[in-house]
Length: 347
Image (cartoon, rainbow, N blue to C red; front, side, top):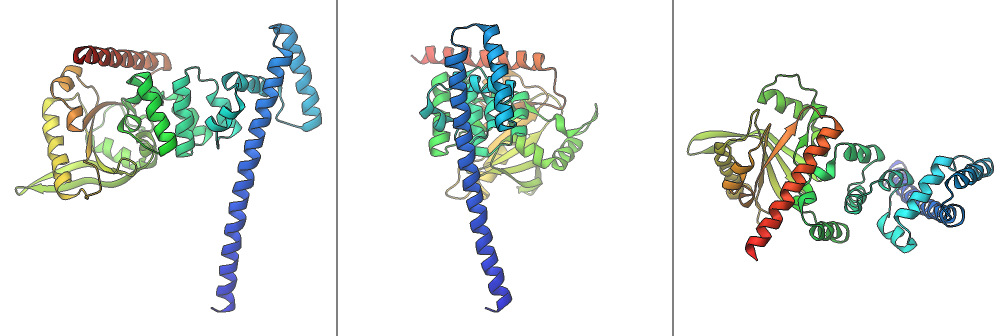
């Protein structure tokens, strides 16, 4: 090894060491700051506002904020002190704090603690930790009602808790955590009228955002993948692979509502992949039919879930949050009623 190569090798080794140390130090500093903010929230809650004297509490917090800002700089605004109080109220046990909010920044935590539903809060916390979401991505996910659109949100509470715990402790990803309905594709910028080719091209143009909407661990494999069966050519619109689920994912794009014949086409794709593309250590492929409207009775009668076929609506324009929330709330209620009915029938 000559001097130049030797220097490059040494520089690379030292650079790696510096980067690892910086990450470790940054993580340690972040953890200590989070614990500090929790402790401040505890003190303010228990010693200033414990008597529920709202106006008196506000005055004291305002005064405390001024003193802390003067002595220690930014980070101790009145608003931030109230964030710390909320943090303590949401997680009053210090040992649980380290376990639940591990590796999350204070900016992440400030967003998550205002999610009132505990299961939903755990969902966003766990996905943030596992997929390393930025605070911007986290806020976008919450705004698009990411949790409510997952199949997971429609399951019983104990099942949701179990799957989130297995994701956190065993890194086990389930289809209920991965797939959503509807998919929000407002980032595609499509005109009021468009063809399936336009939709496909727009998805490929915004592939990174589309994969984020699909969920973590997806990788793009092919567009219009040609398969030949009995000398006849067929074309899969989009083909992906999911590392966690260890299976292929076929996406079939439709411009109108779901029709019964769509199932047969997707079944053909899945059987072909299972026979010709699937490796021995992989799971059977899954299909998603993205359409503008799905019929609940069609899906129920055709036994689509049992055939590893999912039908989901997609939205190219996001409706108002109120309309969207009402729609998803009704979908969750309907699914839960159906689950309860199926359970009653089987007992």
